Image (cartoon, rainbow, N blue to C red; front, side):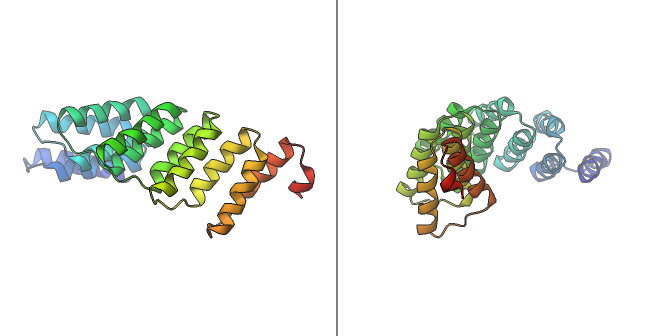
Length: 217
């Protein structure tokens, strides 16, 4: 696998006494992220400090993405703290990984808090940021908050995409709000956002739960 090759090359650099810089480490951490080896990624991040190589935003982002994919939301939040303590810039990629990690961990309150921190830090909030937070609300059975976030996208001039709407429709479907789901379908049509199988399935399921069998057809 590619991550094993990356770690091997890093060890060869050590043997050859070649100068290992932040780029070397960041690339290896990114390889671990792609190989779903978050623990090894964190070890490499620790190894940077041992070798007195200052981790940068790219290094931390690779590590946060690795932990996010591994479902380790606590580790991601710990990395954010370390970044703040070591004065390393946090950007949209960092925040998105953290929000997504909390979403996967069903920590909707933490996802919303991170979104508010992005506003305070004046970080660029994109469709991925909002969509992950809306999905977190869906998992937390907070459909109203999910809809508020969808409305917040328009206020901040961030165009909602299919993923954003699907997260909101799923939230409303789980909340038994079939009328809201159908309203969202109308908005998607009006704003030329693609509707896919996930969207229709959420709508059909919502109508089924609301005993609206005619609308399901």
